[in-house]
Length: 192
Ligand code: AMP
Image 1 (tube, rainbow, N blue to C red):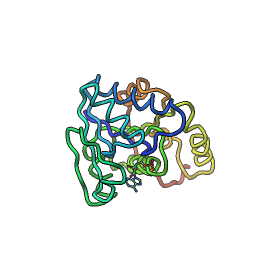
Image 2 (tube, rainbow, N blue to C red):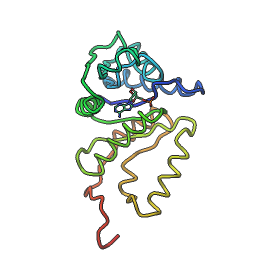
Image 3 (cartoon, protein in one colour):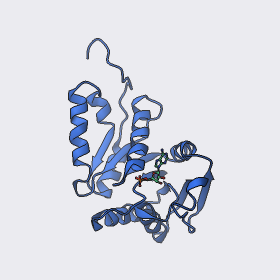
Image 4 (cartoon, helix red, strand yellow):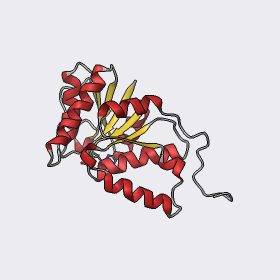
């Protein structure tokens, strides 16, 4: 099994974010679960990869050629796949992975987890997607998502595809229990 971890190319201000990235990388290594991520050595991305490698885990990085220097490609990975574009990066990360977890991060992280979540809503895959809500980092986003449901733009069953946990162990338990919704239908029909 491999899990794709999306997270900030910055470390964030609160040391809790680094601690959570370390805990997640270490847990995945301990459980024999490979890590797929963006291949950088910077920010929380580097922290997750270092922790997984330190725990003896397998880590695969996927990085676009144009970002090799900016994100400082990690040089201690089991496999570093250099791809031609951001789109290719996400496609390769998705195809290598059995589940997706977002730690705190910026627009890159948000875009990545929203993309795989939207693919799940479309029924294009049945892989679990989770937000690791470290110290309430994603609380305001979760409140906004309630509004998206309340305003009729998102069905609750599709909102619930995106699982939320505040620590790595609970996230992994939720991933292992995940059942995709039976009918992935996202456009409102007559009953809704
Ligand atoms: P950020 O959360 O903004 O620090 O970005 C986290 C990671 O997402 C970095 O490796 C970015 O290069 C990556 N990223 C940002 N935008 C995209 C995109 N459109 N497609 C693929 N990766 C992206």
